[in-house]
Amino acid sequence: DGGITQSPKYLFRKEGQNVTLSCEQNLNHDAMYWYRQDPGQGLRLIYYSQIVNDFQKGDIAEGYSVSREKKESFPLTVTSAQKNPTAFYLCASSIGAGGGFYTFGSGTRLTVV
Amino acid sequence: KQEVTQIPAALSVPEGENLVLNCSFTDSAIYNLQWFRQDPGKGLTSLLLIQSSQREQTSGRLNASLDKSSGRSTLYIAASQPGDSATYLCAVAGGATNKLIFGTGTLLAVQP
Image (cartoon, rainbow over all chains, first blue to last red; front, side):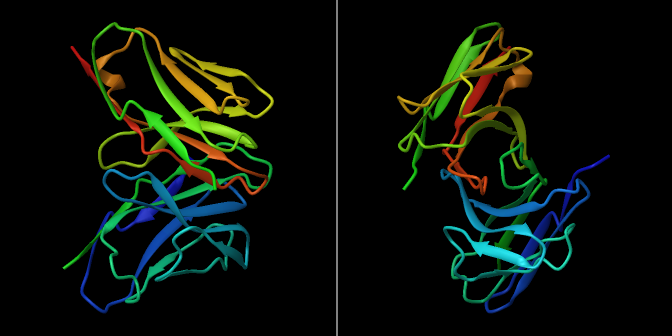
């Protein structure tokens, strides 16, 4: 079955530590996205990529970094510069430019300890 | 800057009722509008997508309408069931990049 796999499901980060969230898709989608979800707020876009080796900042990119070396993979690194990283992180993909349904992963819950 | 608002924030209905969820957006120059469902602690499931040239889409007991000129969309759920209990999110894409801007959602509880 095609879909998006996010790992890990739960992640704990110590102060000052960088952590990387994995997102892999086998849908042959060109576009991939990272969103952050906080209680009482809608999803906010962190980064997106429409093609391999290219990505753009979303609305809240500070303290985050991404790479897109393969079409199937779009990992997100939460750096120590992100002062409030505790949140639910969702990865999504779509066919790409021109619109289309989004497919979401099951999410990673990141907690700072 | 596009802003998406969903009303009500929470809704509780008895099983079997028909209900309407509302979504409004400030910039009518959208590419498409999508409705999603999210169960607690889970990712989002896409329900319906309406292209900017369309006025409505239907899937089973769900019907979504779009009025671009007034910046509004509604999601109609017929004959609600306890399994429909979830958060429903509306999102609009503002251009060919297909970036989605999300509302804060409506938390629906269907009582058996």
